[in-house]
Structure formats: structure tokens, C-alpha cells
Image (cartoon, rainbow, N blue to C red; front, side, top):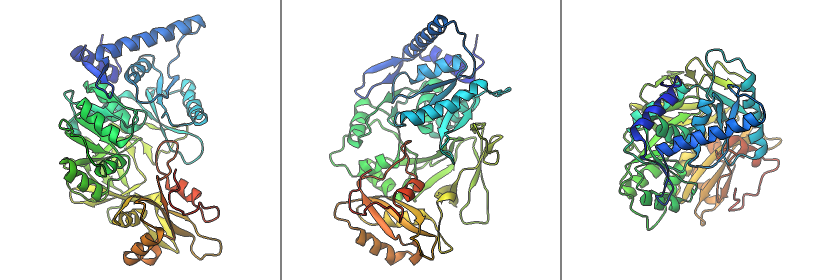
Length: 467
């Protein structure tokens, strides 16, 4: 009998078609799981759970939270299938998140077991950033996860003859939708990797013969700076998401590897939004046209840049435990990003919350970042606003963190900014670092940088502050 859950139904078709075909490899090319092996391990895990419940005299309850906090591991598909079959709400938690925060997220998710979901019970929670210290989750049904997977595979042209290279975290929305669900729903095998060293990634791409690489701008930038690179003749599709891709990196990579990078823009709340199908526009922040079956509407068509409204079958049902119906509900999501039309597509030019108010003048950090990246030897730049020093007339001032070559000094960068930027756009201070600090989810937060490098207790601007 065919399962009523659409993800499980798709898995049954995948299993019937693929059977003992390879499903998961490690980075040396060794087979870790066949599709049948995934199913066998799922049954073994479920049997263990049943035995434990029986020993305690308990019966299973639907919509309890089932959390997983492991790296990129071959058990991911099996554990997801177990949760679907037991009607648990699956909660992926990134391995880097500290125990205290992971426990807090699970505590929130556990409320699903006592929540009346009516006829729309969730099957997955995605952990996302909230406006308070309380963890905020986005709830999804299997129908929405299936829609996102289909939109991604159809738009990007990914099929079961491909081999996905999984170094981005499967626990994040990007990895979940580009690695895990394509394996279950479409039978796309994958390599699992936990080594994020750029040279190791290239070596492993070559050794495994992976054809699809879902990556991030920082990886592609590092690849461009490497010498003695291994040949990757089977790699046919390079995807970049997680942050806007700079034109310089895209062009350098294309010239060095003879491969375009296809920018992919999405959000935890709605899955994929836009995709650069060509990859050779070479424009900062360009993310292409809306994905298949995704509708994008400009909120303010008169403004140069605007927020957008995203409608698709993949949009989540809402936040949990608090709601924000103006932002996410009824198949509609409004991201905080500012986009502008660029030819037939869109480009990301900033975020609503990132705009810096300098004496009444608005500074878009992305414009200053783009200028800093034009300075030879600057590999990464993040611009943010911080409260101005006590007694200053301006309520905010511009500051920046950059990753740059050892010979570059702060004075060089400030001089470069003054030659082309308006006075109010020039950073008051530039911190040159080995790496830009990230938050517990591995993302760069302008708000966190503003706190760390505040005018009241700022770190020294000496070179190589580290993370």
C-alpha cells in the first residue's frame, strides 16, 4: 500500500527503482550505503526505538520532536525516514551549535507534541534566527518539502545520473534541500564530507567524480587563489548560495576552471527563490530569474531597490512558537533582503535591517563592500553600522571587517574609499582580520559585528584579529 505521506511515497518509488544502487559515498569513493541499505538501517533504528518504548511500557505519540545533531553522515536519510514514519517532527540542528542552544531549540520544538495542528501537522522544523534570544522555528509539511526539492531539481537540471558533493551542512536549509531530499525523492546519490578545507574539497571532488557541487562564495574564492589545482573533469554544475557572489570571484573562477558558477538565492522559510541559469553575467549579487513554479513580486515597484513577496508551494506554514503572519503565512513569504531588477533577473543589494543611518543619510553596506572588494588583495569585506561615539552628531557610523593580503594596511583601504565614496559612506574604522567572525550557525551577522566592534569596547584594529 502506497504511503499517504508524499515524501515517503516518493521514497518508495525511488527504492523500487534504485534498489541496490549506490546512494552514499565517502570522500575516498568508498560506498557507505545503497538505497536498500538506507531502508534497512531505517528499519533497524525503528525496531530499536520500539523495543525501548516497550521496555518502558510507553506507546508512541504523534508530533513529538525528533532532533538530530550530527555532521554530514550516512545516517541522515534513514533517520529522516524514521521520523516521517513515526509522525515525529524532524528538527535538524547544526553540529556547531552549542549544547545549551541546541537544548533550547529542542525545548521549543517539543511543544509540537502538545499543539493542536488541525489538518496541517508539520513534519519538519527548520531552525532560523529570531528577533529575541528564544529559538524560532519554521514549520513545514512534507508537501512543501517535496515542492522545494522538485523546484530545485527541475530548475537546476539535477537528476539521478548525477553525484552530489555534500560538504555544505545537511542540517542547514540549503544542504537539506539540495542534498537530502533529492536523494530520497529523486534518487540522486551523494558524497558526504566533513572536511571544509578548500584544497581537500577540490581533491575529493576529483577523486569521487562528483558532478554537482553545491557550495558557497568563500569556497569559490579560495579555489581561485590556489595553485596546482587538481583536474575535476566530471564536475558539470557549480552552485553558490548562502551569501551574494561577487562578480570578481565568479569571473576569476570561470577563467580558471572553465566553469560558470550558478548563484542560487533562497531562504529557510520558503526554499529556493531565484537561480542564475547562465552563470556568466558577472555582476555583484546577481541571482538570476525566479525558479520554476516560484512567483516573485516586487513590493515597491517605484523604488530602485525593494523587498519582494515570494509565493510557491514550497513556502512554510509559519513560525513556531510565535507567528508573524505579515511575513510568513498562506503560501507567502517576505524576505528582509533588498533586490533590484537586473535585465531579466534580480540582484541582491542589501537588507532592510542593514541600512546604516549616518546623520540622516542612508548607507547601503553592499555598496561599500563592493568598493572594498575592488582593492587588490581584499578577499572578503563586511560593512556594518555601529553607534557613533558619545557626543557625535551622527547616530551611526560605518565600520568594516576585511580579510586581505598581509601587505595591506587600514590606511591604504581608507584612502581608497575616500577616492570614490561619498564622505558619509567612508568607514570610520576598518578591521583587517584572518577570518570574519561568524555566529553559532556559521553565518556572518552585521549585528554581532556591531556589538563586537562597538565604539565603547571595540577590539584593537591591529592586523589578524582572527575569529
